Length: 170
Image (tube, rainbow, N blue to C red; front, side, top):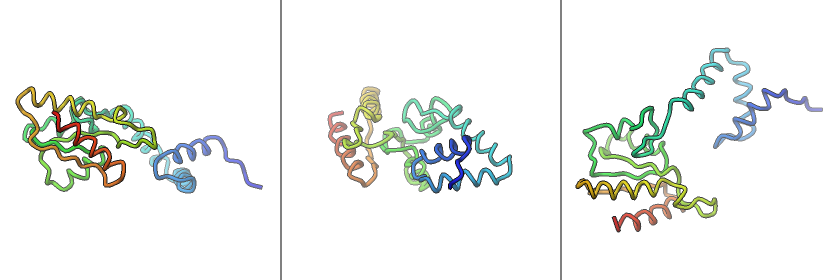
């Protein structure tokens, strides 16, 4: 007969299992690792989780992660404001920044169009992107280049096509 889990352990396993890419076995391994780890390691993890919720916000302009109203990229006066790269997630910004090649600005959609999952354009930051393009044109600094860097998936391609169509009229 299996020993029932005590409530705090079961709750932590369930919490880990809700994270993307973490299955039940990995959730159990993580939980038991923390039980065996020094207390400082568990407390450091807990503090990091609280800090992420308390201190990280989305940039008001591009929707990348930030600790301020505007992220470091949007605040950088050297960045080319006439070049815009549209990505699905903040992790995509990080990946592109690691290359050191793109010197423009970004716009993070926070997902991709996926009718099967009930995600339409209204659930993404597309309205904000179109308003941003309109504002740039009106202010005399229209985007010379918009790179749509969505993922090479069916959803990413559908999102790219939708954006290309909508941005043509801006």
